Each structure stands twice: as C-alpha cells, then as structure tokens.
Image (cartoon, rainbow, N blue to C red):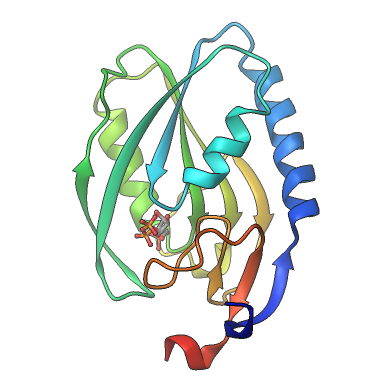
Length: 178
Ligand code: PRP
C-alpha cells in the first residue's frame, strides 16, 4: 500500500494530539447538554471513534450513511440517504461528524435535512477541511486540519474503498487514480 502514496501529510502523532484538543474543546462547550454525535458513514467512522473517546461528558451516538452522485473525485450535490438515523433528533443538540469537507455539497444537504427535523442546535466537526474546493457556503465549527487540494487517503478517507485503514493521512500518487 505504501508504494501508492506520495507523502504523509498528517501523522498518527498529529492526529492523536489534534483529536485530543478537539475532544477537550467539545467537552467544555457541551457540558450539561446531552450531546448527540452523528457519524456520517463511511468516511467518518475512524475520526468519530477516536473523538468520542476523548470526550469526558455524556454523549450519545447515531449513524447516517449517505452517498453522493458524481464521479469518484467530485460530488454532485445530489445526495441519497442510504441509512438514516435510528432516533428522532427533535430538541436535541447534535453534532455532525465528517472526515472531510470538500465542495461542501454533501454537508450542506445533510445540515438542511437534519435542521428540518427540529433539533435544538446543529454543529459540525470535521477532521479535514479543504476550503479551496468549496462550492457552497458551509463552515465546520470544529476542524482538525486545513489541507490542500490533493487526493488524500487514510484515517477514513478512501480511494475506491481502499486505504481507509491507514493510521495517517497521505497524498495518493496520481498514477494510482488516473
Ligand atoms: C466524502 C466525505 C464527505 C464528502 C465530502 O464522502 O466523507 O461526506 O465526500 O465531499 P463534498 O464536500 O465535496 O460533498 P464520500 O461520498 O466519498 O463517501 P464515503 O464517506 O463513504 O467515503
């Protein structure tokens, strides 16, 4: 697998440190609020599992799987819910957990969809943010790292369903995906 990678851009040590900081910040800001964290599958499953273990407040979890129509590298903004939340979010303080916000189209759809269900508040935590790619205005409230516009894999991010298990974030060599 390593031969497919051009370079590592977020190391396991950086991930551990930053997730710890985010966990501390979220724990402070959501003390007494009975937070519900919503993992957007599949990419966010690793960040979500690390992040919830860094929270020292009561937290509930739920999961939503979405797919975006489009090419393997560009989402279209048309999103289909493959698996919906188990429970109602009405009146709840919720946090959407993503691995990466790129064009923002997926996140915008998810936020609009969830807001229509009457939660008390909606915030977003993403591990990676690629603001240079944004096509709609959405800003994560909690962000691990701002990253450049490159093909990234690892820590949940895939190419053709592979590389999600890498314990770091790396740039995929162009020859692998083109
Ligand atoms: C990725 C990622 C976000 C979305 C970001 O999911 O997890 O949900 O793309 O892209 P956008 O900001 O341009 O909409 P993907 O559709 O690749 O599915 P996956 O999480 O199952 O890998």
